[in-house]
Amino acid sequence: MSKGEIVLGALAPHPPHVVYAENPDQNEPVSEGGWETLRWGYHRLARKLETIDYDVMVVFTPHWQTYVGTHFLGVPRFSSKSVDPVFPNIFRYNYDLEVDVDLSEAMCKAASDAGLITRMMRNPDFRVDYGTITSCHMMNPRWDKPIITISSNRNTHYYSPEVMIEQALALGKACRTAIEDSGKRVVLVSSHSLSHRHFVTESPLPEDMSKEHIYNHSQYVWDMALIDLFRQGKMREAIDIMPEFTEQTIAETEGGGLVWMMGAMGMPEYPAEIYGYQSVIGTGNCIAAWVPHSDKREIVL
Ligand code: 2X7
Ligand code: FE2
Image (cartoon, rainbow, N blue to C red; front, side, top):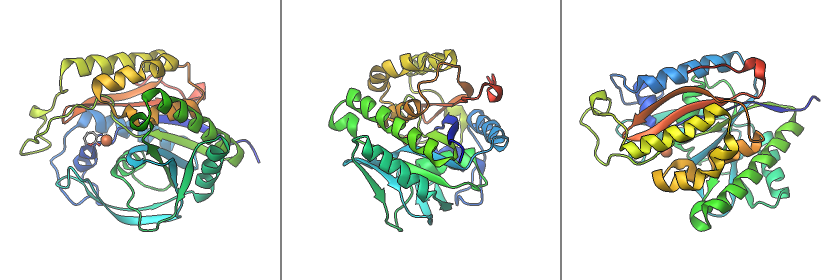
């Protein structure tokens, strides 16, 4: 068996608004569009993924929060309706997805062997979170590959951002070991926005783009500082400023997704591909990808 590998890692924000704007059959509410800069970026990334041979998508989401250790999906198939708790008016999505339980168990064991607290999630009635569903839908709307979701352990809040970073890096390394041993080709997905201050009232028509803008200028400046490091391939520096970035922008980076992915990918020193940046109810959202094989790497934006 040849060695498994990570073929792409994506920062894939999950405002349910982008799914709502797409009007897929699975989502009940109907929209007039909106957030095209993000959606068109996602379309381009989805087209690229169709040219890359991979077996499974592994998603780290901040909307499956676990307080004792890191949990991994451990049931072969989940089928249900996902309703966004804050935006039930825009996201009521019927999903039917497959899980690569073998790789999920292998990652869980590798993380446990590395000293992390882990658990397989075996409840067949478990409701898969909307972060996983949104990012996976936008990256692979055909849903023709199995996925794995990894929960976000609340280390930042229980201990500190520094402890979170240490544990997320260790989790990433363990996942990489399991992926290499599995012989599989894997796409990693860090599902989250960047700056996360958001408006607390919604415009009467959610997709009214005349109302959409970043929450405030400082959020924009912080997002651009981080994206600049992505572009320059300075991921160690990006992780170093993560505690301050997270505190200043109350970012979803607090969940550890990006740090986990960088830990798994060995802290890339090459430029990320940038697919788009746009606000959604004031939050900052960047679609970016890190591609280890230089012959597959592009300058997108
Ligand atoms: O979960 C989210 C998000 N991260 C960003 C924007 C809007 C809604 O939900
Ligand atoms: Fe979110």
